[in-house]
Image 1: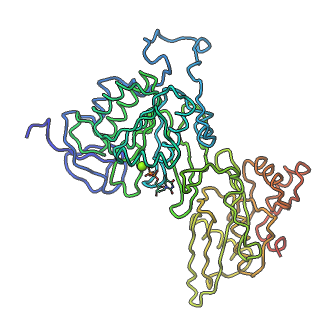
Image 2 (image 1 turned 120 degrees about the vertical axis):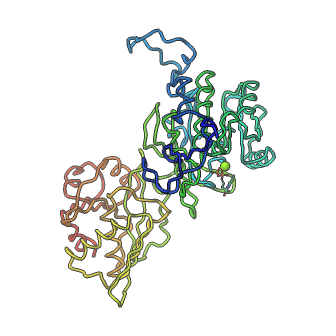
Image 3 (image 1 turned 90 degrees about the vertical axis):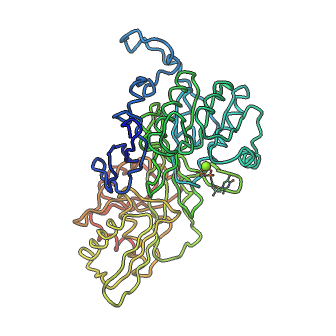
Length: 470
Ligand code: TYD
Ligand code: MG
């Protein structure tokens, strides 16, 4: 077999190439990520991109087609092409930094069924209404035209300039793009689109990179704002959007709880705005709905007088959200107490349990402990430690924690209560939502003294909680 068309194995996570199959990738250390692809004769899987230059990796706005005239003073560079288009879906506009930048390429990733197609369908509908002359092309390799149309009717979208196309061959898609000249282009999804020029199977790393390169290149040259949908799977059986992140302008991941209805749109790369911004949506009968009062969205205050619950405040992007932490502490007669968590790291819980044992003097080996964050939110920071401890104590003592009290603070290994960042934003929200009391660190209390109409209780050690609570 000639070298040109021989088989090669490529890691679908990091694009490492190997002449034989490997269980573990020597480059990124992932297991079972090698897939057989046909060697197109290039030594680097990036080669075809490199040969054609790296135009796709740059953003020049409207100047994409003009020849560069060498370095220029920064003050003389025209930035008028950065005008933003607002879709009217506020949560989305905020996430992308105040509206879409025309000609930009956005990658929307998420697990299958999370709502990517629904979001893009609604976004397309809005754009079609706002800009009736703009042509929108929605290409789906997954759903037929009638499937797409029936969904769009259900969502109340029925615009004349909104074209749908069921196709997975990139060369055919590109032909249609050239004919229609859309202002907005949606590719659903990158994994189902294949380029004839690449011998590898659909969904492989070589294919998704090639097609993304082509989309980016065309988008920049013709000022076509493009959305590329990419599936993310936990198993890593198909190449994920991660590998494409450096090629596009904006990377957004759609997260959510399989069982809950909320959906979080999180931006992790944005050449035109802030990262770590989130948008909050709810999946309902007629598509995605923006959540209008996100700060209270994750609370269910129907069980006012239950044991084992307390409120905390977390920061997601530029938002402050109230969440409820529930704990259930029950006897375990064998002394091998189990710890089960949902929404918080189990190692974190183990540490907080150890703090209770050591500094509160409460042995917990003969207790099973369950801790759950209500609403399906996953806590990624430590500012809820105090609330987790408060909920556990409440369950253990069978006493309620007051509903108007918010617990904010990290707890360290010596049982000390630590200050957490962005306290002003939290306090403003707490005041506005009429909470009466905040239990937090002494440092935080000093910082906020006299500024807010909220009672501040500062404690230096977590063990003081018991006195505050009961
Ligand atoms: P979808 O957008 O197809 O997900 P993805 O493109 O990320 O794979 O969303 C699919 C899920 O959303 C599906 O399980 C049904 C649900 N859904 C609703 O609950 N209400 C709706 O109005 C729509 C359109 C979808
Ligand atoms: Mg879909």
